[in-house]
Length: 398
Ligand code: FDA
Image: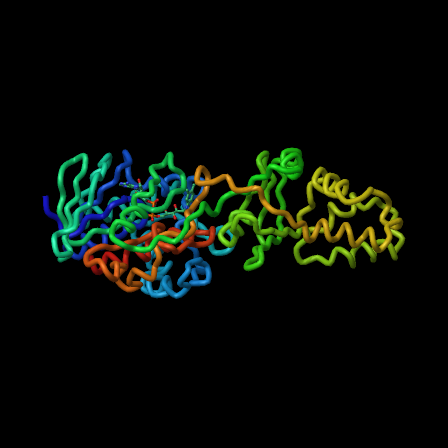
């Protein structure tokens, strides 16, 4: 069967691209090997899908070529997607920092995309395994796909297979392999937006404090975030930790300030000068706007000195305590890996892809969109916005 456009992968980017191409009158087919499309949309945002963000900027993305994402993000903005969901009267709300979530469930977003595909005349085949992609002789830009459901031919082939995160949801390396088959460069990949694990003494401490959360400032040598942080029975997690993994390589140090925006040294010294009688551990729980958990303060204080009335601390002891609470520096043993990572950092090198059309520069008719590309967003709706924007832009040219 012959199509104008075949899209491999019915995720966020693939479905957006399919609907856009279909509305342009292109005979479009989506092929997905999973039993249903859009599985990551369904599990996203804790079941409510953080589908975009009011404050999308190119700076929210990591890519070897920091300019690549700019064109698509400006041609299909968060407001375009908000308009789309508005047409379907989707009820949504803003959480912190411009993050937009469905009021009801993530399936509302998938339903909108599937309705758009239906209205645009897009055909979707699931449980379809693709065994080979054969370009036409002479590279004139048509492709033959051999699949478990027969042979399909197209003029434009869009690779929208995503990355490797959550293999149980259907993630495969197919997109990266296909890129290599056609001579594109694939930059090294790693799981990201993912919790850290410990195998040293911090593991026992994390287990002991598992479930304790607080606002922190977290940093690596190239980035810092002020977000919520959580101890787990394997290590540490929470938005702060996930965000920093986008800027982290194995072996790098990470630093955490448990009292962001506070000069702890000044506070402790002021209590001491005022002759406050309380013990330090009691006072420390009350410094932040949201009181810190007592078991965290006790454990952390035990790690760097004794607890006593605040008036009895020397300057050296105060320095040590401040360092420990405000610059806790450690090397994570690793991450939880693709099993729980929200995204794959790295991917198809954007140098080989047009930022306008998303067509491979050297391979006519072959397009790459969404997470398979070396463009990774922050936590907060930025990855879906990239999927919508790249999918929509490619949909104009396929
Ligand atoms: P996506 O992964 O969505 O789709 C790829 C499709 O290709 C899948 O349908 C897959 O089955 C198919 N496929 C793979 N291999 C294939 C093969 N060999 N043959 C055929 N088909 C194949 N982002 C965000 O902005 N807000 C959020 O709230 C969240 N939340 C979130 C939670 C969790 C648990 C995860 C894992 C991820 C998120 N994300 C997120 C990230 C977001 O889900 C992700 O960036 C986008 O889904 C990427 O869209 P793509 O279409 O590129 O890939």
